[in-house]
Amino acid sequence: MDDKSNVDSALNALKKDHQEVSTFGGKAWRSNDKLQWGVGAIQPLVDGDDAASQEALIAAVLECLEPVTETELPFSACTDGRLPVQLSDGTPVPVREQMVGADMVSAFYVAEILGERFYKDATAPVADRVVEVANFLKQNDIEPSSHIGCGAGAGFEAILKNIIAFSKDDSFLDRLASAVTTKVYDDQLQETIVKATQARLDANVYEGLSVQTFLDAVKEVSGTHAIAELKNDGRGVSGHVEEAIVRLRRPGFGVNVTKLAEITDGRQVFVVSDERLETLAKLFGRGKGDDYRTAYLALENFADAGHGTLAKRLPTWVITER
Image (tube, rainbow, N blue to C red; front, side, top):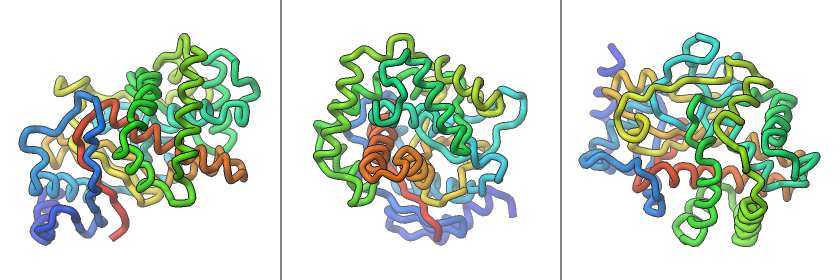
Protein backbone atom coordinates (compact mmCIF):
# COMPACT_ATOMS: atom_id res chain seq x y z
CA MET A 1 0.00 0.00 0.00
CA ASP A 2 1.46 3.40 -0.94
CA ASP A 3 1.69 6.40 1.40
CA LYS A 4 -1.37 8.14 -0.03
CA SER A 5 -3.44 4.96 0.40
CA ASN A 6 -2.22 4.64 3.99
CA VAL A 7 -3.54 8.11 4.76
CA ASP A 8 -6.85 7.49 3.00
CA SER A 9 -7.29 4.20 4.87
CA ALA A 10 -6.50 5.83 8.18
CA LEU A 11 -9.00 8.61 7.55
CA ASN A 12 -11.80 6.07 7.12
CA ALA A 13 -11.36 5.07 10.75
CA LEU A 14 -11.35 8.61 12.17
CA LYS A 15 -13.93 9.73 14.67
CA LYS A 16 -16.46 12.24 13.48
CA ASP A 17 -15.35 14.55 16.28
CA HIS A 18 -12.56 16.54 14.61
CA GLN A 19 -11.00 17.30 17.99
CA GLU A 20 -9.15 13.97 17.93
CA VAL A 21 -7.36 12.08 15.19
CA SER A 22 -5.95 8.59 15.71
CA THR A 23 -4.05 6.40 13.25
CA PHE A 24 -1.46 3.68 13.56
CA GLY A 25 1.08 6.52 13.41
CA GLY A 26 -0.08 8.04 16.70
CA LYS A 27 -2.82 10.16 18.24
CA ALA A 28 -3.52 13.88 17.95
CA TRP A 29 -5.93 16.15 19.76
CA ARG A 30 -6.80 19.71 18.99
CA SER A 31 -6.45 22.47 21.57
CA ASN A 32 -9.02 25.20 22.02
CA ASP A 33 -6.53 27.98 21.30
CA LYS A 34 -6.58 29.15 17.67
CA LEU A 35 -3.88 31.83 17.78
CA GLN A 36 -6.52 34.53 17.74
CA TRP A 37 -3.99 36.83 19.40
CA GLY A 38 -1.53 36.38 16.52
CA VAL A 39 -0.59 39.22 14.19
CA GLY A 40 1.15 37.42 11.31
CA ALA A 41 0.23 37.19 7.65
CA ILE A 42 0.11 33.37 7.57
CA GLN A 43 -3.56 32.51 8.00
CA PRO A 44 -5.75 29.49 7.24
CA LEU A 45 -6.81 28.97 3.65
CA VAL A 46 -10.44 29.84 2.98
CA ASP A 47 -11.51 26.19 3.22
CA GLY A 48 -8.53 24.92 5.19
CA ASP A 49 -9.95 25.01 8.71
CA ASP A 50 -13.01 22.83 8.19
CA ALA A 51 -13.07 19.58 10.14
CA ALA A 52 -12.44 17.20 7.24
CA SER A 53 -9.57 19.24 5.87
CA GLN A 54 -7.85 19.44 9.26
CA GLU A 55 -8.38 15.73 9.89
CA ALA A 56 -6.79 14.89 6.56
CA LEU A 57 -3.81 17.13 7.21
CA ILE A 58 -3.12 15.83 10.71
CA ALA A 59 -3.64 12.21 9.67
CA ALA A 60 -1.00 12.82 7.01
CA VAL A 61 1.35 14.34 9.60
CA LEU A 62 0.94 11.24 11.76
CA GLU A 63 1.94 9.06 8.81
CA CYS A 64 5.03 11.22 8.27
CA LEU A 65 6.45 10.78 11.77
CA GLU A 66 9.87 9.13 11.71
CA PRO A 67 12.47 8.36 14.35
CA VAL A 68 15.43 10.73 14.21
CA THR A 69 18.70 8.88 13.67
CA GLU A 70 21.36 8.89 16.38
CA THR A 71 23.59 10.91 14.04
CA GLU A 72 20.97 13.64 13.64
CA LEU A 73 19.63 13.82 17.20
CA PRO A 74 22.21 16.44 18.27
CA PHE A 75 21.03 18.71 15.43
CA SER A 76 17.68 20.45 15.16
CA ALA A 77 15.46 22.04 12.53
CA CYS A 78 13.33 25.16 12.59
CA THR A 79 9.58 24.96 13.24
CA ASP A 80 9.29 25.91 9.54
CA GLY A 81 7.00 23.73 7.40
CA ARG A 82 8.50 24.68 4.04
CA LEU A 83 10.06 22.09 1.76
CA PRO A 84 13.77 21.47 2.45
CA VAL A 85 16.25 21.94 -0.40
CA GLN A 86 19.56 20.74 1.06
CA LEU A 87 22.02 21.25 3.88
CA SER A 88 24.83 23.72 3.30
CA ASP A 89 27.28 20.82 3.07
CA GLY A 90 25.38 19.62 -0.01
CA THR A 91 23.67 16.63 1.60
CA PRO A 92 19.88 16.04 1.78
CA VAL A 93 18.03 17.57 4.73
CA PRO A 94 17.31 14.77 7.25
CA VAL A 95 14.41 14.42 9.67
CA ARG A 96 15.24 16.33 12.85
CA GLU A 97 13.47 17.53 15.97
CA GLN A 98 12.11 21.06 15.58
CA MET A 99 12.12 24.31 17.55
CA VAL A 100 11.25 27.91 16.67
CA GLY A 101 14.44 29.15 15.06
CA ALA A 102 15.96 25.70 15.77
CA ASP A 103 17.90 25.33 19.02
CA MET A 104 20.17 28.27 18.24
CA VAL A 105 17.63 31.08 18.26
CA SER A 106 15.39 29.63 20.99
CA ALA A 107 18.37 29.03 23.25
CA PHE A 108 19.64 32.57 22.67
CA TYR A 109 16.38 33.98 24.03
CA VAL A 110 16.72 31.85 27.17
CA ALA A 111 20.26 33.13 27.70
CA GLU A 112 19.03 36.71 27.26
CA ILE A 113 16.37 36.23 29.93
CA LEU A 114 18.78 34.57 32.37
CA GLY A 115 21.27 37.36 31.70
CA GLU A 116 23.99 37.45 34.34
CA ARG A 117 22.81 34.06 35.62
CA PHE A 118 24.11 32.62 32.33
CA TYR A 119 26.56 34.93 30.57
CA LYS A 120 30.12 35.63 31.53
CA ASP A 121 29.34 39.18 30.45
CA ALA A 122 25.71 40.02 29.75
CA THR A 123 26.78 43.33 28.19
CA ALA A 124 29.16 41.78 25.64
CA PRO A 125 28.53 42.50 21.93
CA VAL A 126 25.56 40.57 20.58
CA ALA A 127 27.67 38.41 18.23
CA ASP A 128 29.84 37.33 21.17
CA ARG A 129 26.77 36.41 23.20
CA VAL A 130 25.36 34.32 20.34
CA VAL A 131 28.67 32.45 20.03
CA GLU A 132 28.72 31.87 23.81
CA VAL A 133 25.28 30.27 23.60
CA ALA A 134 26.35 28.17 20.61
CA ASN A 135 29.42 26.92 22.46
CA PHE A 136 27.32 26.14 25.55
CA LEU A 137 25.04 23.94 23.44
CA LYS A 138 28.00 22.22 21.79
CA GLN A 139 29.64 21.52 25.15
CA ASN A 140 26.41 19.79 26.19
CA ASP A 141 26.17 17.53 23.12
CA ILE A 142 23.72 19.71 21.19
CA GLU A 143 24.81 20.97 17.78
CA PRO A 144 23.51 24.54 17.35
CA SER A 145 21.56 24.59 14.09
CA SER A 146 19.80 27.08 11.84
CA HIS A 147 18.64 27.64 8.27
CA ILE A 148 19.25 30.30 5.66
CA GLY A 149 16.75 33.15 5.94
CA CYS A 150 15.37 32.01 9.30
CA GLY A 151 12.37 34.20 10.18
CA ALA A 152 12.90 33.74 13.92
CA GLY A 153 16.47 34.98 13.54
CA ALA A 154 15.53 37.87 11.28
CA GLY A 155 12.56 38.80 13.45
CA PHE A 156 14.13 38.18 16.85
CA GLU A 157 13.38 41.68 18.18
CA ALA A 158 9.87 41.59 16.69
CA ILE A 159 9.16 38.34 18.55
CA LEU A 160 10.43 39.86 21.79
CA LYS A 161 8.18 42.88 21.35
CA ASN A 162 5.25 40.56 20.71
CA ILE A 163 5.97 38.53 23.85
CA ILE A 164 5.35 41.78 25.71
CA ALA A 165 2.27 42.68 23.67
CA PHE A 166 0.73 39.19 23.67
CA SER A 167 1.20 38.89 27.44
CA LYS A 168 -1.52 41.51 27.86
CA ASP A 169 -3.99 39.01 26.37
CA ASP A 170 -5.36 36.43 28.80
CA SER A 171 -5.75 33.87 26.01
CA PHE A 172 -1.99 33.99 25.36
CA LEU A 173 -1.31 33.47 29.06
CA ASP A 174 -3.79 30.59 29.10
CA ARG A 175 -1.87 29.00 26.22
CA LEU A 176 1.40 29.29 28.12
CA ALA A 177 -0.10 27.82 31.25
CA SER A 178 -1.62 24.87 29.37
CA ALA A 179 1.60 24.12 27.47
CA VAL A 180 3.95 23.80 30.45
CA THR A 181 3.60 21.95 33.74
CA THR A 182 1.75 23.55 36.64
CA LYS A 183 5.06 23.60 38.52
CA VAL A 184 6.51 25.91 35.88
CA TYR A 185 3.90 28.55 35.09
CA ASP A 186 2.76 31.29 37.40
CA ASP A 187 1.78 34.89 36.71
CA GLN A 188 4.68 36.31 38.71
CA LEU A 189 7.29 34.36 36.74
CA GLN A 190 5.63 35.42 33.48
CA GLU A 191 5.77 39.04 34.62
CA THR A 192 9.46 38.60 35.43
CA ILE A 193 10.14 37.28 31.92
CA VAL A 194 8.21 40.14 30.33
CA LYS A 195 10.12 42.72 32.40
CA ALA A 196 13.46 41.09 31.53
CA THR A 197 12.52 41.11 27.85
CA GLN A 198 11.59 44.79 28.01
CA ALA A 199 14.79 45.62 29.86
CA ARG A 200 16.94 43.97 27.18
CA LEU A 201 15.10 45.84 24.44
CA ASP A 202 15.40 49.14 26.32
CA ALA A 203 19.13 48.58 26.73
CA ASN A 204 19.49 48.33 22.93
CA VAL A 205 21.56 45.15 23.22
CA TYR A 206 20.53 43.81 19.78
CA GLU A 207 22.29 46.38 17.64
CA GLY A 208 23.88 44.50 14.73
CA LEU A 209 21.90 41.28 15.30
CA SER A 210 20.79 39.59 12.06
CA VAL A 211 20.14 36.17 10.60
CA GLN A 212 23.78 36.11 9.57
CA THR A 213 24.86 36.51 13.20
CA PHE A 214 23.19 33.20 14.03
CA LEU A 215 24.42 31.49 10.86
CA ASP A 216 28.01 32.58 11.51
CA ALA A 217 27.90 31.19 15.04
CA VAL A 218 26.36 27.91 13.89
CA LYS A 219 28.92 27.48 11.13
CA GLU A 220 31.79 28.27 13.49
CA VAL A 221 30.67 25.80 16.15
CA SER A 222 28.89 23.01 14.22
CA GLY A 223 29.83 23.44 10.57
CA THR A 224 27.70 23.51 7.43
CA HIS A 225 25.89 20.24 8.25
CA ALA A 226 23.94 22.27 10.82
CA ILE A 227 22.61 24.80 8.29
CA ALA A 228 19.67 24.04 6.00
CA GLU A 229 18.22 25.74 2.95
CA LEU A 230 14.45 25.77 2.53
CA LYS A 231 12.41 26.34 -0.61
CA ASN A 232 10.44 29.46 -1.40
CA ASP A 233 7.82 28.16 -3.83
CA GLY A 234 6.19 31.55 -4.29
CA ARG A 235 3.16 30.77 -2.19
CA GLY A 236 2.29 32.86 0.85
CA VAL A 237 4.99 34.76 2.73
CA SER A 238 8.37 33.46 1.51
CA GLY A 239 6.60 30.23 0.64
CA HIS A 240 4.93 29.81 4.04
CA VAL A 241 1.44 28.29 3.82
CA GLU A 242 1.30 26.53 7.19
CA GLU A 243 -2.24 25.57 8.17
CA ALA A 244 -1.68 24.36 11.73
CA ILE A 245 0.77 24.20 14.61
CA VAL A 246 1.80 20.74 15.75
CA ARG A 247 3.20 20.19 19.24
CA LEU A 248 4.97 16.87 18.93
CA ARG A 249 5.22 14.95 22.21
CA ARG A 250 7.08 11.94 20.92
CA PRO A 251 10.76 12.23 21.94
CA GLY A 252 13.23 11.20 19.26
CA PHE A 253 10.68 11.59 16.45
CA GLY A 254 10.33 14.24 13.78
CA VAL A 255 8.09 15.06 10.83
CA ASN A 256 9.38 14.14 7.39
CA VAL A 257 8.42 17.45 5.77
CA THR A 258 9.36 16.26 2.28
CA LYS A 259 7.06 13.24 2.56
CA LEU A 260 4.26 15.40 3.97
CA ALA A 261 4.45 17.71 0.96
CA GLU A 262 4.40 14.74 -1.40
CA ILE A 263 1.29 13.07 0.00
CA THR A 264 -0.70 16.27 0.63
CA ASP A 265 0.14 18.24 -2.50
CA GLY A 266 2.32 20.72 -0.63
CA ARG A 267 0.46 21.31 2.63
CA GLN A 268 2.50 22.58 5.58
CA VAL A 269 2.45 22.69 9.38
CA PHE A 270 4.64 24.35 11.99
CA VAL A 271 6.16 21.79 14.39
CA VAL A 272 7.66 22.09 17.88
CA SER A 273 9.25 19.07 19.57
CA ASP A 274 8.07 19.50 23.15
CA GLU A 275 10.48 17.04 24.73
CA ARG A 276 13.43 18.89 23.17
CA LEU A 277 12.10 22.14 24.57
CA GLU A 278 12.07 20.63 28.05
CA THR A 279 15.57 19.18 27.52
CA LEU A 280 16.87 22.67 26.73
CA ALA A 281 15.17 24.04 29.83
CA LYS A 282 16.90 21.44 32.01
CA LEU A 283 20.20 22.22 30.33
CA PHE A 284 19.94 25.94 31.04
CA GLY A 285 18.62 25.21 34.54
CA ARG A 286 21.90 23.49 35.44
CA GLY A 287 20.29 21.91 38.48
CA LYS A 288 18.76 25.15 39.76
CA GLY A 289 14.99 24.97 40.03
CA ASP A 290 14.38 28.68 39.49
CA ASP A 291 16.59 28.80 36.39
CA TYR A 292 14.90 25.68 35.01
CA ARG A 293 11.44 27.19 35.44
CA THR A 294 12.56 30.48 33.93
CA ALA A 295 14.20 28.74 30.97
CA TYR A 296 11.18 26.50 30.36
CA LEU A 297 8.68 29.36 30.41
CA ALA A 298 10.98 31.55 28.31
CA LEU A 299 11.17 28.81 25.66
CA GLU A 300 7.40 28.47 25.63
CA ASN A 301 7.01 32.24 25.30
CA PHE A 302 9.39 32.29 22.35
CA ALA A 303 7.67 29.35 20.65
CA ASP A 304 4.17 30.78 21.00
CA ALA A 305 5.11 34.39 20.25
CA GLY A 306 7.20 33.21 17.31
CA HIS A 307 4.17 31.53 15.79
CA GLY A 308 1.97 34.49 16.66
CA THR A 309 4.41 36.85 14.95
CA LEU A 310 4.31 34.79 11.76
CA ALA A 311 0.69 33.68 11.80
CA LYS A 312 -2.85 34.22 13.05
CA ARG A 313 -5.88 31.97 13.67
CA LEU A 314 -3.98 28.70 13.19
CA PRO A 315 -5.30 25.68 15.10
CA THR A 316 -2.90 23.77 17.36
CA TRP A 317 -2.71 19.99 17.50
CA VAL A 318 -0.85 17.97 20.15
CA ILE A 319 0.56 14.64 18.96
CA THR A 320 1.35 11.79 21.36
CA GLU A 321 1.91 8.07 21.05
CA ARG A 322 -1.28 6.20 20.28
